[in-house]
Image (cartoon, rainbow, N blue to C red; front, side, top):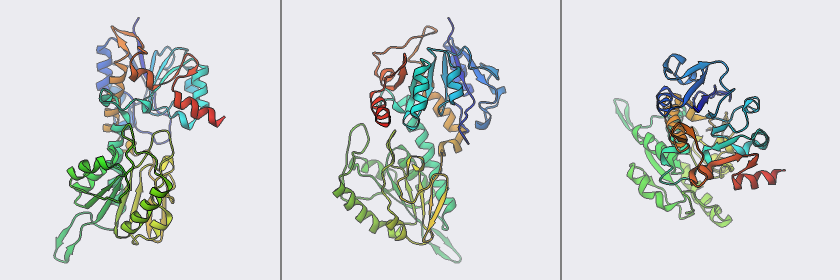
Length: 373
């Protein structure tokens, strides 16, 4: 029996990405799947219906779907229309809505949250966090450059020499490294800071200086461990002294499923130069700066603190292309000989499964949601 793969129009406000591009629709058809796209699903990402030569375009595609691909979580109304056993794949943000997880369980939906995918070498081609973080880091620096009242590069003009802006990127994950590379391309004097000492070489390989504050918090799985109160106090003291001469800060420190760590205090902001700019990339999960408000710009003592929302969506074409390839690589683990087969012995399938057969399968999510009840 042919597997029907469906992509819906995104319902989240200002979401421009689409989970399936024409390129991937063709590849899925080549694997024997029937592909259906909701009318206009790709319009905001510059993929109009006419480009989907290998897919059926319709206003009602959700009924009869075997697999549903999304970027952000589907609406509650869409979830209730899914038949039992449907496979849902996307960034499902379970921590943000226990009610949505309950709907998935009640509807007997087998859901896979791509943000839960183990970050292993084998999973790199499916890692949506990395692909989308790259776009976010790039856009964050462009946003900072637009908001800053200075040039980023050094310029020699008839009116004299313009010194380059001093830019500090906090966090050296995928978003941070892309931000460093982008700021360097724009000609700024760039520093990178991370509490994981092992990223020093990566920062310096991009032409930036590694800012060493004497605090190391190397953790597991590529993430930093939580700082002790003493370590946090020492970090904030040294960082506060350093940022007084910084023109632009881009913060990128985030932990999936948890609140973003607080790094920039109000006192630090008040000690910065008037005209300085902070772009707080994890604004939607609380932000790295105490003054950050998601979706707004807060000005304190002449310093602008920008809390961007859904930056990857601003680069919708390339963000969608990368995301769709991630999903295709993940879905390929389940499509065998034209049929859908879930191998629960495969850790990528087992560990990214959120709900199945009426239960929350992801242990950490189950524990976290139980604590909220």
